[in-house]
Length: 300
Ligand SMILES: [Zn+2]
Image (tube, rainbow, N blue to C red; front, side):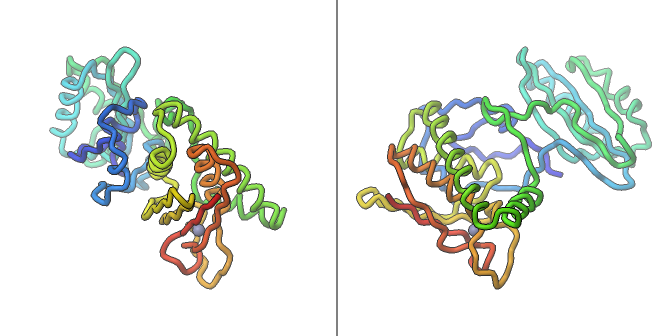
């Protein structure tokens, strides 16, 4: 499990604060070209909700520090106990300005109990509160603070892609082709609402709003944008994405493209961004079949 807020020196002009505490502050330093930068650092990120380590002693350690200095002290204290392995966690700014850090730790090699770890760290004056929640079962710990999950100022929920794809497949088995039309319609509605909200927040429109939206869905784990081409005069767009959640189950030899929700999302997004109606969107190549990416074409 990776730490949710990675301590790296990668500065993006658009997102300069940790995702877990991300205020939707698009500053004057906003540069659309950075959204498609090939230099962007990417790492698989685990939502710090559940930690499973079979046969190991794991716990959730939570501390509230009044400021960054206090947080560094508690992290240094944990780091000094070399037998305590930090597996991942989250950092959130709480209401009074303090910082809450929640970490999953593997303390098997320390020989300590959860109470022992809490006691050994508890004497640090810069920490307002510290608690160690032991495992639910051997090798299983859960985050007890992370609710509700937020994306910007909106509440969000997370589904596992495999389960979501299974649900879509089940829908196709029940409804046949009608299921694809339904998914397209749902995606279209989502794309409209998504673009409208982002436009209200940023005042961006057109191509810039599309680029920002695609960057945001990438940050939400939907897919990785590989290529985006726009012909503003002809009102024609092409884009290519990889690892799209809808098409993540590879089926070599299949000839049917799998994306219906996302192509609906794109049509709704582009309509809202450009103030148009009836934008068509087709998936011309699909990674679920034999292609390296899912390619989409849009036109008025
Ligand atoms: Zn596809």
